[in-house]
Length: 183
Length: 426
Image (cartoon, rainbow over the protein chains, first blue to last red):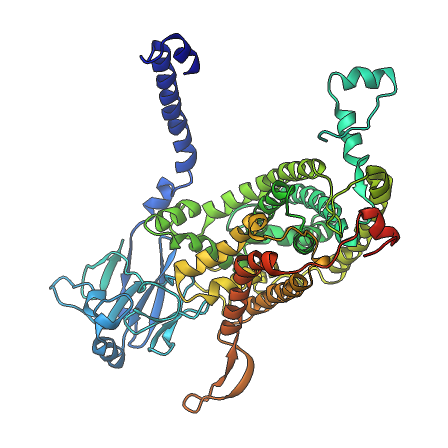
C-alpha cells in the first residue's frame, strides 16, 4: 500500500487490487483447508447410523425402571406409580425452572392417547452429564444426581440443584400399546 | 540465550561452528549466567519441574508402546503393563505419580512467584508463558487420567467435556464435536490419546520460551531488588545453582520414589479400578487432587454457566496478575500486610481443595440435628467453598490492587549483596 501511495496519491492501483485479491483467496483457501481438519472430529457416519432402537415396555412392572442404551446414552423407561403421576400433575408448571406440564413430558400413542404410566427420558443430568439415580430418589420422588446434587421430580423435571433443564426426552413413537421406537 | 553472552570459542572448530550455528554458545549461556547470589530453596522448583517433564515424556513415550487406546482394551492394557510388561510395574506408577509430583512442584513454583512478586515488570511475559504451561499441564493431566478407562476416567471425561455445554447456543455442538459421538466413547478415547501425546511437546516448547524469557531480565530473588552490580550481586548459575538445584532435585526424587515404590495408587481413586460403565455413575465423582480447588469453585455456584465461568475465571485471573498488583515492591518480605493476605490465600487454596474432595452437602462441623428429617445440620462444605471462592477472587481483584496503594512497605536493603552480608541492614 505504501509503495502505491508514493506513486499515485489517491487512486487504488492494480497492485492494491492484486494484494487484496491474493489475501482474500488465501483466506478462503485457509478456511477450506481447515474445515476438514476440524469436521473430522464430529460424529462419524457409522456412529450416526446407530440411531434407532425398539423397546417393548410390557415387561416393565409398575414402580420399576429399566435403562436402555441409545446412541451410547442411557435412556430411562419408568413405569410410574399412581402416586408419582398424581404428584407430577399437581405441580404448577409455571413455578418451575424449566416450565413443562407432565403431559408435555409424554408422547401420544397410536390412538392419540397419553400413557402417563410410561415415562421415557434420556438419563443424563443436564448439569454435567452424570446418570441420575432413580427409583424415587431425592426430595421429589424422582431422580437424584450424585455428582452435584441436582434433583428431578417424578416427571423428570428439574426442581433443585445446579442443572438448568429438565431431563431431555428422546425422539420416540409408539408402534403398539407398549412397543416404542426410539430415534 | 539472549543478550548477555560470556562464551568465547577456544578451538578452531568451535570458532568455525560458532559463526555458522552458535549451538555451543546457546548451551554455554544457558548455564554460565549471572544469577542473584541470595536465591533460596524455593527457587529450585524450576529445575525440579524440568527434570519431571523429561521423566514424564520418557515414561509416557514408553507406555504408549504398550497401551491400547480402545474402549474394549484400554483398561486391560493398563493391567497388562503393570503385570506383564518388563518393568511395567515401575514405569506406569512413575508416569501416574509423576503427574502428581509435577503439579505439586508447579504449585510451589507458582506460590513462590506470587510471594516474591516474580510476575512484576519486567517479568510479565515470563509469568504469562508460565501460566500457559500450567494451562497445558491441566489439559494434559486430564486427558492422561482418561486413558486407563476406569469409572473415574470415564465420568471425569464426561463431566469436564460437559463443561463446554454451558456455552450458550453452540455448547451442545461443541461437546458432540469433542466426543466424536453422542456421548464419551471410543472416538473420544482415541483423540485424547493422540492429544495427550502431543501436548507435552508443546509444553516443552513453551518451557524453552519460559527459560528464554527468564534469561532476558534474569532471575528475581527473595529481596525482589534488581541486580545493580553483577560482580557483587550475582554468582554464575553453574556451578553454584546447578549444585543447589541438584541437591533439591535429589530430595524431591526421594519423595517421588517413596510414592512410586510404597504407595503407587495412594494419589488415585479406588473407583478407577472398576471398568468404565456408561450406564452407572459412581456415587461421587472427584477429580485428581490437583484440580480439586477449581472443582470446589465449580460446585460452589448454583448455576451451570456461572459455575463454569467462576472456575475458568480463577485461572484467567492468574494471567492478568501482573496488572492487578499495584505495589512497586516486588517481594512480600517487605510487605507486612500483603504477607498476611498471601498466607490466607494459600490456606484458602488448600481449603478449596478440601471442599472439592468432600460432598457439598456434607458438614464441615455439625451444630445440631434437623427436627423433621433427622439429618445433621451445621456449616456445610458448600458454604465453606463459597466463602473461600469469594476470598480467592477478592485477593486478586480487591486486596492486591488496593494494598499496593495503601500499604507502607518496610525498608529494603540497598542491594542484594548487602542483604546477604548484612552490612548496613536497614
